[in-house]
Image (cartoon, rainbow, N blue to C red; front, side, top):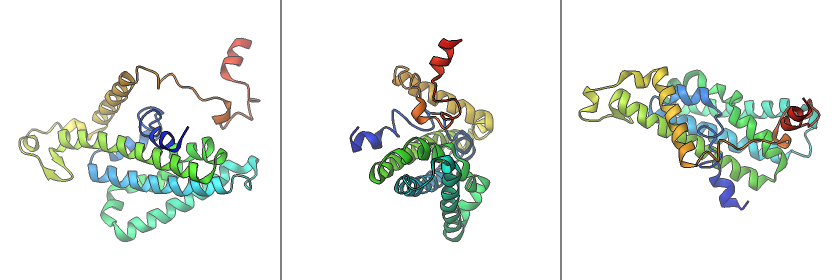
Length: 225
């Protein structure tokens, strides 16, 4: 895989939200407005980039048995720095994101890329992977937020849209509307890809529990039964 493919996979074939179905909680929570979606996407991308670079650089130093706690400590440190910067320079964004900004610490996308990619690849490749996944996460957030804000509030980036502002579909800004848009977008992506993305499975090399199960694949376990 060349560097362009490494970057583009996070946007298209392995989009963390629409294909891998990760980061669902912040996706549904902050996608009610485009500005919040942009802020969350940027914050998550910065944390993902920094954590991937550091974890990749230290991959031969961090003991394998304590790698997950080490990853969480590193990620939490970067999230804290990003949160402090947002509070200082963008208080309105900090207020709109609320609890979901510090919760980037437990975002499956961040820890997932650390475990599945950064600790197995070089720094440059890990940085490109982080940028691609961050771009894919931001793209999915923007797509959902645009649909929900335009239809639910009749605005785009807070700017009122004639006719739509007087004919709002209020449910689009609520949880049911979020799940509806989320499901439709996943179905569209699956249709465009011909179902190929949905059929992708992760091997033992990408599973955090591989050591516990003795690195026996699920197919082998089923065959044994």
